Image 1 (tube, rainbow, N blue to C red):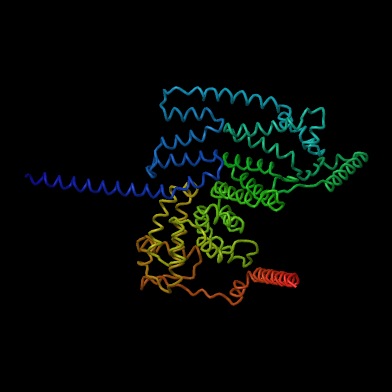
Image 2 (image 1 turned 90 degrees about the vertical axis):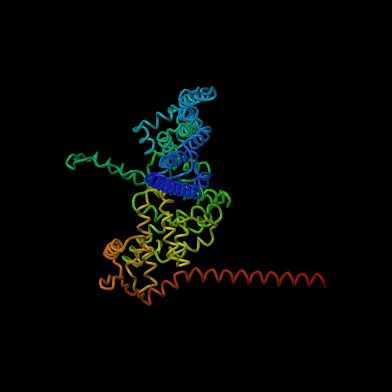
Length: 549
């Protein structure tokens, strides 16, 4: 046999083996991506319109060959989600994508399209008077200043022809526009609707301009009287809750409107407005729960929905402020209860957020030693690990923290960090934070490794950080310089020498006694309950003894 043929055959065999190995690695990676995919867990707690951005992202992952799904699977899911909505044109496009560009559109879709246009025109006609009034800025400002911008005053004014039925039709039109995919119009209409139940503070009267023009005593006197009237009106006015768009009251119906406003802000990607809407929903839920207008089970469900919707807002808000507020919300007792009982998969986003904000919170704590009402960097990880122990959920991000903080398994943490990168790239909410997360995770490894070692060899540390020795040295130098770490590099021994972190007696006492009042109060309450039960039991026994006699 020709020796050159043998060489070629051997090269082909090696190439085939390499290709098979690469294909197996890709298949394994896709299988893990499907295992870590939380779309099925998150979707029951989202409005179906919010699923479309998630499915678009899954489509991009399919194009990048990162997940084991197909474009037809995603298109079929889109079509199923579109059935309850009024986005008929979008549904027709998806149908052609599935059945072919020349496929005939089903008659049911054509009939639904005609019905949508008919219903839309009917709703617009039914609320045209109120719609025109909302667009008339001068008349609307006049009514607001007179305190007549509410349902009762508008309906009692015969010149306006705005009845409660007209206003209800306007609300239905806002919902119909939302179901048609016109989120901006729905947002503006819901803003107008909410304003009918709001009582914002009256604006200050504008000045007349130049003081030289005010030379008429009667005009001056009239202006003083007008200002006095406005001051009296302001004192009599009942200003609504600023955190809930100045609503004077809230009920379950208005809560649904607040949810609609939040959904619209998210879908038009107005993250500043979405932050305000999220706060309004949260405060409304807590107010209704406190007044027993929501049952405990319903309140738990509402809080669970709020945390899922907050993922869109907090992970898209610029800077770390959004993540800090998300961590603070998730660690609130009632919301933490929802995570551990209903939505343990949210532990992924809580863990990622804690790792991303930990250094920032620590720096703020160092700059100002008062942590009143805010996050405490020393307690973040303790609370996170306690939550991890109560959640029946795990993934590479959670396991990474577990390896470092619980098992102190640095080799295992290195393997999990490599898996974290792939998970982050395939997660809709975390994908933009991949590089920052890896950087913060390396800092976390460095901090934990150096906490139990006074000297660390650069080569060993580079292996723990998945970096070569020179890159690790440059990275550590930048970290020491930027983070003001108490450490230095010994160039002769090629190691990092850590300084000792000595906490003052004051800090240790404060840390130990931080929750002393709460614990003491709980202890007194428990003892009181035990004594009361003991007295009741003694009284029952005495009555039983008397009855026997």
